Image (cartoon, rainbow, N blue to C red; front, top):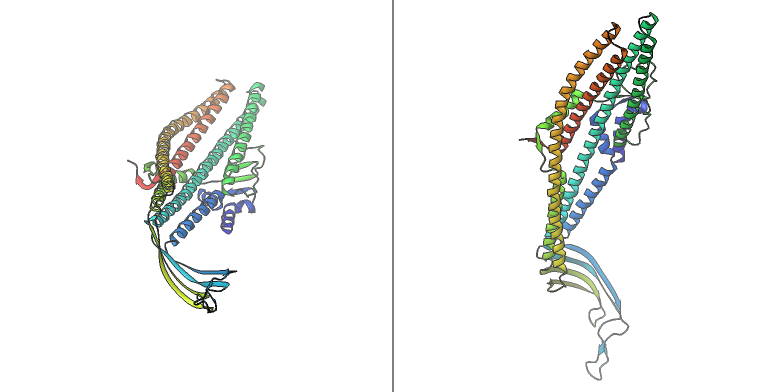
Length: 452
């Protein structure tokens, strides 16, 4: 397991180790690394293995048991008797007594108690398997949501960088116009203030991106030593006067991510979700445990066979080979109601597990339906935001042309630029919301089943 973790870590963060300022991170590799290195999944796998071993051990009790038994006793007084008053006493044994040999025992009938116990532990093992599968599904969803958040922060940083370049270009143009006497000192100061505001916003976006990257790194490879103080999206030109980034980041293309997750909108709710199956297995385990406890109150027959070397042979001081076979019947008639109460306890646990399953299914179905509703809303918002970006882009261009022609103050230019940035940011957020809800839908949907 440790070697597997190391391999995935090397595949995922090798670019970081070789070139500290360059990181390419596909979603598939981030998921694989997180799954391979998760302590929680490792613990779930150990619990699953333990439950399977316990079930196999319980099933082994159904086979005949072969053992070597031995005993030794020392008696200080040996009983003796005289056949006739004048005959010497005959000792009925020896001070030293021992027996050694193999014993074969088999529970031929126990009213179904052992069979029910095996079924109970097998159901618990199945529950642990579903717990591991459910934990892995939740971990993958967490990685995906964090990955999308990083991508959203990268997009916001790109938009702010574009806004900063626009502000710098307008400031340079206004400064030239001021020197030519076509613009006022006030306009030049306002344009420079716009540049400073965009630089401040850009630094805030970098800090936000660094935090999101740190969250993703904690999930995928917490031991990686990466400088995330000044991250930057790869392929985006750096505006003037912006410090050199500590690392450039490239993620999967947005179109590829939508192609990967959009089919989830047509999938039906997963009625066999691992969390639901685990609770069903727990209920079945408690049912079988209750049946086993009730059966333990019935008769049980144990057959046995033994071959041993015994000493002494009654009154004769010699070692003999003794072969024996037997049957033992046990039927508990009264034990203070212990078995009945224990069976009632397991039956109550079974009902509780079924109640939790119903509640969990209600909660998961609600989250699945809410994700569909949110995706629908986010998709419609995206269309509105896309139209708003087109209009704000045109408005910002016309406003600046009007300013250059002297028909409007520079304050209107600032307002138009800010509205354009807000519209672009809203579009990026709605697209991020679409991806987020699609990922939630996929985690709660049954693969291959179509939604009605």
